[in-house]
Image (cartoon, rainbow, N blue to C red; front, side, top):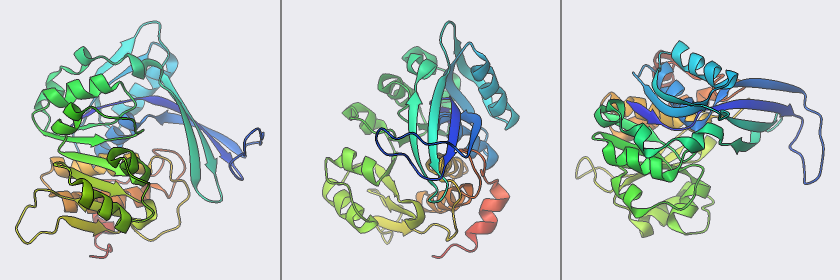
Length: 306
């Protein structure tokens, strides 16, 4: 499988609570590590046992070299990551409410904004059984990768902004949270997965959609059902546990989803594995602090309802 996406250096500030407008707070502690939606998803897929190629861009700085080394240590092929001379690597500042395991994130794109359509015309993209991409790199580049792919195209439409019809026309699976679904459908944000089901029922997209809802699990919409008896909508539960840090849980979900699809799993089974993995990932600090391996995911799947 291949991932086209962002690589960021993360700074996580752990707080007693999130600040209000104009307010200054002192952090309990600061954590520094590798991040970026694309790289996080590649890391999650690799830890879950997939063979992963990463395509992206970093600056010619220490942060870029460190992020590439981190991915390679997990077995990710980084030969498709460009180093942009004179540019700084992307970065993210994450404010973590330690009591609620909630966060606020601000991203500086840096070199990610310099990833061009020509950079994704590589064999790793063309030949991947599954291409996974997001929206922290230019949309034109994401579209170019999707058009060149011959395998299943999974688009995590985050952070959400308006998408060209051509990109949605090439997507096989679109992964969104509830606020991103609102943007995709041009509808009010759903307050529950039942609301999300109603929105998708009205929208009737030609591509499959997975709506993630944290502790409430996920909703799978399949316009083309694998069997006549299969439902268009399937709800998949998350594990019941007490989270420590939800940062990167959505990225873990997408990475494991793509890894299971690359193994030949159906969409609902892949979503079940992704829900389990995302839940487990919240038990440690940092976007990659709790990434579970394939064996741990499979053990946890035996306790998932349904």
